[in-house]
Every structure is written in C-alpha cells, then in structure tokens.
Length: 364
Image (cartoon, rainbow, N blue to C red; front, side, top):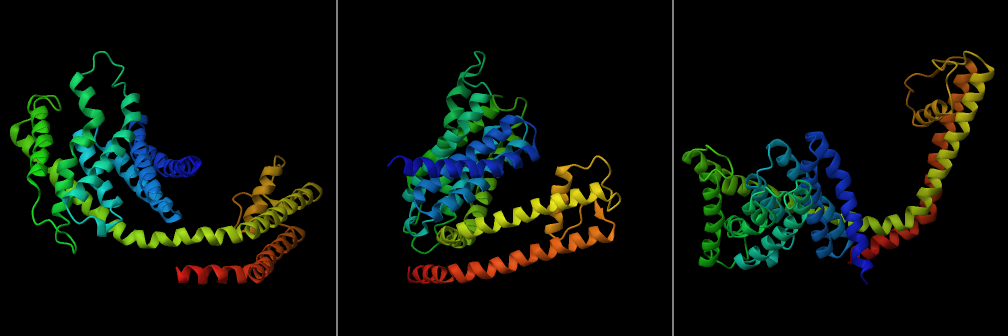
C-alpha cells in the first residue's frame, strides 16, 4: 500500500531534480540557491502528483514542480543573500496559481486559503534543506528571530497570498464570497507589519529609508505576487488540459514498449557492425577515410557509424576512397530500410491494440 505512494513520489522528485538542478547551475554557482529551487520544486511536485492520484496527476506534478523550482532558483540566483521576504511571496503565489487545477471547488476565500496553506506547508518543507545547508540551526551566533521565522515564513504569508488570489479570482463564475472575511484581512496585516518592522529595525537591510520600505513592501508582497499568481493561473489553465495527453500515453507506451526496444536493439546492432567494418577498412586500406589518422580507435568508429546512421556528417572523419563511400552508402540504405520495414511490421502487429485503446479512451 505504501509503495503506491513512495515510488511515484520518488519518480516525480527525480524528474523535477533533473530539470531544475541544471537550470539552477546555469543561473548561479551557489549550491544553496540551487538547493532552494530544487527543494521548492520537488516539494510542490510531489504534493500535486500525490493529490492527483493518476498518470495525469504525475505529469502535472512534474510540470508544476519544474516551473516552481526554476522560478525559485531564478529568484534566489538573481537576488543576492537570499532575502526570504523577496523570495517566498512570489513563489508561494505562483504555486497557488499553478496548483489551482480544481477550479470549480475554489468558490470562496475559505477554499483559497486552504489551497494556499497546503502550498505554504510544501514550500516550508522544500526550503528546509537549504536552511540546514546554510547552517541556520547549527550556527550558535545566528539570530534567534531568524531561526523561528525563516522555516515557517511561507505559512506567515498565507493570509496575504490567499487574499490576493481571492481578489483576482472573485469575478469568476461560481465564486460565492462578495467580500473577504474580516479574519483573513486581519491575518494579512500581520506579515506586512512584521516585514516593515524587520526592515525598519535593520534586521533585513540596515540603513534603508522609510519610503524604500514602503515601495519594497508594495512590490514584494503585493504587485509581484499578484503578477506571479496570474501567470501561474494562465499557464495552468492552458497547460492542464493538454497534460491529459501524457496520461493517455501510458497505455500506448505499454503496448509499444517491446517493439521500441526491438527497434533500438536492431538499430544499435547495425551501428556496432558497421563501426567494425569502417575500422577494418581503414586499417587495411590506408587513406580510405580522411581525418582518421593512426590514433583512431573503436570509439571514433562507433561515433562515425552513429552519425552516419542518422545521415549526419562526422566532425573529423569522412569517407575518401570509393570503397569507403560504397560502405557508407550501404550503411545508410540498411539503416533507412530497417526503419521502414520495422515500422510497417510494428504497425501491423500493434495496430488493433492501439485502436482498442483509442476507442476505450474515447468512451471515457
């Protein structure tokens, strides 16, 4: 029973990490910034995927987590020092906009607050590895206020983000609340006051002026998160229906997995076979290939055979003699023939199975 949750979560986490980690290192060389993006992306992805409980949910989780992870890594890399007040609000708002895939159920501020709270918990979990790597909990000279606030900062921003998301959604059909609840408005004031207090007392940026505090709060806690939420909502509205295609692909891949493997084995066999032919011809007929040289080994001939099978020119080696050109021509004919013949055979074999899958999905 537990494996039904663990293995999909591991697969989603690995897929998101493969996307976010290279993207993060392309932006910044700081490991902690990359860890911020990876942690946030993985946490959101696993949460969305497990709540979806279907192949479509897994693909949606990977997509949403990758977007959140890349956005987090981008903000962490562009803003030096990881000021969480600038990082958490837009990432949380973006996450809420992206995971809002059950639009009919979000009919009021209560449901919006629930979804925002779930996203904040996931982000708090995702930020923990980065906070641990920064030594927040092990540094004896660290500020006690930071130790308390930073791990739960996404939760502190829940009222503000839920209020912004609700105000940007309340005109949609099915929204039942005409005005925000008083308790939500009161809760939204708390993080704003807290951020202003921390900036005014120099805990965030010593020497900052009051007008700069006001501008920074308006931008970081209202304008940028609102834009992030709208971007996330527009993106998921367009992408989520199209992600259902990937859920249907699972049934087709189960049928085509064996033929695809057979094609790959045959194609690789042709490549390996002709790499030997090329190497043997070059050894017994000096000058058959230009650019080979005396140091050409099996890896060079495997590479040359691989690019020849794809119809591409290799960088350093090219056929020079008539025999070498004939051999390359035979290789190209066999490679193209293998694709055509096997494709026809596979479609004849699995065509009826694919039609049954299409009819079943059409009924669903």
